[in-house]
Structure formats: C-alpha cells, structure tokens
Amino acid sequence: MELPNINKKRIISLLKDSKRFDSRKPFEFRDVEIQTGISINAEGSARVKLGKTEVIVGVKMETKEPYTDHEDEGTMVTSMEFSPVCGERYESGPPQMDSIEIARVVDRGIRESGFIDWKKLCIKEGEKVWSIMIDIYCINDDGNVMDASSIGAVAALKMARFPGYDEKEGKVKYEQPSNKELPLTENVPLALTFHKVGDSLVLDPNRDEEDASEARITLAISSAKKDKMINSMQKGGITPLTIEEMEKIIEQSEKVYDELFPKLEKKVKELMK
Amino acid sequence: MSYTKRLDKRKFDELRPIQAEVGIIPNADGSALFAFGKTVAIAAVYGPKPLHPAHMQDPERGIIRCNYNMLPFSVTERAKPGPNRRSKEIGMVAGNALAAVVDLTRFPGTVIDVEIMILQANASTRCAGINAAAMALAHAGVVMKEMVSSVSIGKIDDKIVADITKEEEDYHEGEGPTDIPFTMTSRTKQITHLQLDGKIQTHRFKEAMEAAKVACDKVYEYQLRALKGEKINENK
Image 1: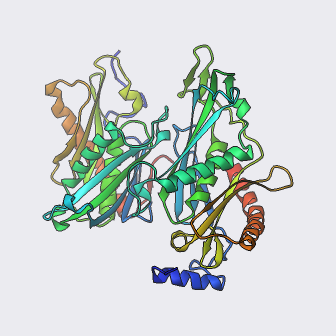
Image 2: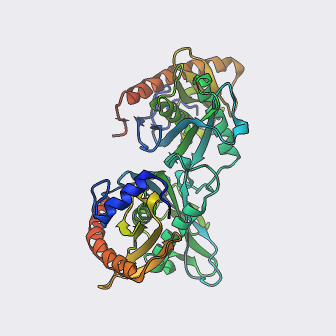
Image 3: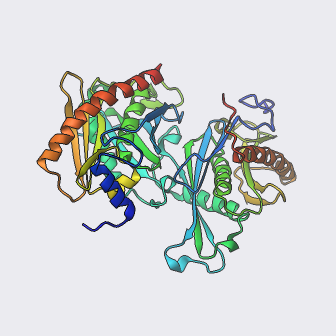
C-alpha cells in the first residue's frame, strides 16, 4: 500500500522498534482522567480525558412501553456524535458511520456484559419500563474515542440516579430526583481498542496513529467472576488480521485489563463518595 | 404579591456566579467556556479556512458560520439530538451578533466556523453561548474591532433584572416574565443582537437597555480576564 505522508512512514518505522512518538510502549494506555456531575440536569454525567482526547457523556431516563418480546425489561439507547467542536475534520449533520459504529459497539459492550439488570427497570410488566438514554459527545478528538466513550458511559451510569416518579399519576418528576442508584451489576465492561499500523499492533492510538492504521479491533471485556469475558468485538478497516495477531491481542488485552481496570474502578469509587 | 426579592436572592442587577476560561479544546484554533450559574456553554472556532462549496464564497469578505447545539442531557426532559428550528435560529442570530465585530474583509473567500455547545441549561443559554464564542474568536486571534458581551435582561412582574434563570422564566405572577437577550459591543455599546419574548411597556424598554449596558460591561470584564489567562470559577 502506498504511504500517503511522511508522518505515517515515521510512525510505522518507529513501531517496528516498539517506539511511539509520545514515548509510550505499544500496549500502554494513556492516562485517564474522569470527572463526574458535569451536567446537573442529566440523571448521570461524566467527562473523560484520555490524553488529549475528551468525551462527555450524559445519561437521561424516561418511561416507555417495553418491547413486546421483553415485556418485563427496561430499554437502552446509546448515541454518539463527533460534533464539529472536536476537530477540523468533522462537519455538522446527522451522525456519520464512524459515530454510529462507536455508539453501537459501546452499547453492545454494556448490554452483553450484563452490567444493567434490565428486569429491575420494569415498572409495570407489558406497560411501562424505564428507558436509559446514553448520549456521548466528543469534545476533542486525539484518537481512540471508542475506549474513552466506553469508560465515560460506564462512569455516567454509575453516577446516575433515578428521577422522581409519581406512581399515582404515572409521571416522571425530573425536578425531584431520587437517591436511588441504577440496578448495576459487577460485570463492568471495559472497551480496549487495538490498531494494526504497518505490521505492528498498538493499543490506544492517538489521532496520527489512527490515521496511519490499516485495521482496528475493539474488545469489550468484563470480569465478574474469575474468568475474563469478552462481551463484544468489532473489527474495523479492510486489512485482515492474522490468527497470530488475534492471539497476541487477546493475550495483551488480558494484561491491560488487569492493570487498567482496578485503576479505573478506584477512580470511579472515589467519585461516588 | 409582587416580585420584590429574586427567587435566588440575587440583587436585581446581579449576575449569577460566572465561570470563564479559554483554551479548553486543544484541536480548535480558539475555544472557551462561559457559564452563568447553572447555564454552561462551550465554544470552538475553526478558521478562517477556505469555504467549500466554492459557490458560497464571497470574494470580498469571509463569512461566519455559527452552529448552536443543545446537548440532549442539558435539560431536564431529554432533548432530541441534532438541529431543530430553534437551534438553527439561535445559530443564525449568534453568528450575526459576532460577525458585526469581526473584520471579515480581511479574510475574503473564507469561512470561520463557530460551534456552540450547551452542556447544562438553566435559561440564558444563547447569551452564555455568544459570550463563549466571542472569547473563542479572540482566543483564535481573529481580528476583531471590539468584543461582544451578552446578557439576558428580564422583566419579572414589574422588575427589571439581569441574567434571568429558568425559575424566573417560569414566574407567572403579576405581569409575568419577559426575556430580553441583548448582545452589545464592548467599546461603542452598539446592539448586535436583540430578541424579546413576553410583554414590556414601551416606556420601560429604555430601562432594560440601561440594565443591559451595565450587565454587558460586567460580562466583558470576565471575558477580558479569561482571555488574559485567568481561569474564573465563582461557584467554588
């Protein structure tokens, strides 16, 4: 494949020696900063900084009719937007494929991990359930918005409290929030995104590395019991990944999870105090 | 009962606690945050840059393209994401409020993109947005003749107040609420944006304008301090 720019050539040649522009190791995650309570009208909110990448996430709740095939379970909708605020390359308009993909991958990680106890979101079977709406906005894109979005969504869900609910009238009272946390489980999903740049694999790429990337894969991992579970996967890009590369990715993702997850958990716990 | 004391105990001409800061979005050419109490806006400026499609270019002057975007979770009842008639109108009037002070003849054929995002809403969102956008333009180094500052003046019952809140917007006793967002230039005190919703006696409008002048001057002080590098947060 032809190399479009000198930056890309340099990134690829450095990675062959396991080096990166920002002096990180290939499988090193950038520092994560989490701030919560950034928007008081949201039921829960968070701002996540991953290096220079920044996303804000808000959780809103409302009551809805359940789906007919899950009459006693709550629902969830996740949306994501790269607004023109976050970088020169983005234009306003309806969400494009890149943001739709992030929303769907984050959504699947949360859904499949069993992080939310859907049955506890039921108000009246077949008639009324709580619906959780997660809105993710990128404020500054310096690569790997996917993982930042996933961390932000989890933090915002953890901080969320049900709005007030008047059972007699069957109405939501947003101005009287309850103190009740969402029915969340120990199966906390964490998304990890690897990229194939040249013939090398990297974790948590910055924007330049992402631009030089030929293939991408995101894994959402949770670990309620002693086994780590992969709850969702998504490969992006056209270039194929070899079986050996996939094995390396799985192996590395376990290591990174063990290192990163306790740190994030501690941060969120501190914020919840 | 008349409106003798403000619901949040402020003086009639007092602004809510202000937050102001520039340089919050590293990718942008200029960026800023501005908050009136619980109303928080951020703005990013990209440009001047070549305008596409080319047929929209003006060979004599650049244009300002302003978008106003209220995040779905910024209000109590979730707002549907994406543009709507309200946000398009506010984007337009905000763009006009800013264009008045930018020397656009210096950038022929270009566009300056101004993106306003409301993170948290409690009335006066367009004013907070315009203040942030004006700071972001200055922060981007765009040539400006003077600054613009924006405040929502209200007439709540029969009292003229500065920087109205959601609770005041919903105050329906006596003469009820009137919302008058003003944007004024810092030096020559010209009005670059003015809207009004409600009812106000013609002879009292002058009073509202006077209040706007005083309040915009206060906002200007904060904008100036933030542009000099101070991170202002009066909430703490």
